[in-house]
Image (tube, rainbow, N blue to C red; front, top):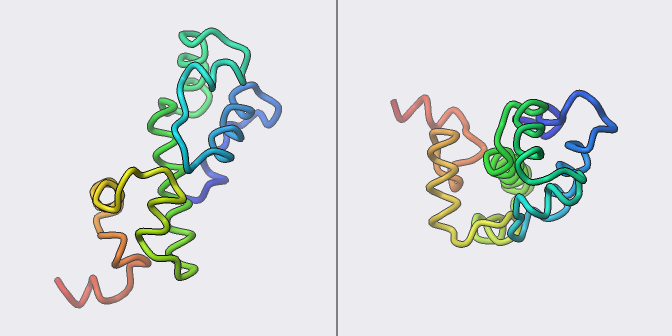
Length: 120
């Protein structure tokens, strides 16, 4: 999923500020408390507003942002290990597990090519 498809509709929203914060910190941990502070909401209100505006929980959204960046990096020739480190996955195995669950292929096989069709 392209990163632009993940943006909330209202460009000046506090939720968008939290999304920008997430994008700037893909490599490290991000807490709901931090995001709520950026949006200037209580954590509970932030969770409700974030889900309403994006359709996702903050954790799920961050995972999707990270995966989108991993795909972009892999398409540019970055190794799976480097992509995992740059995008906040605590190991290559963790990235591989999440990537496989979300895309149906291992990151080492991304970008998915006609090889997948030939394998079936």
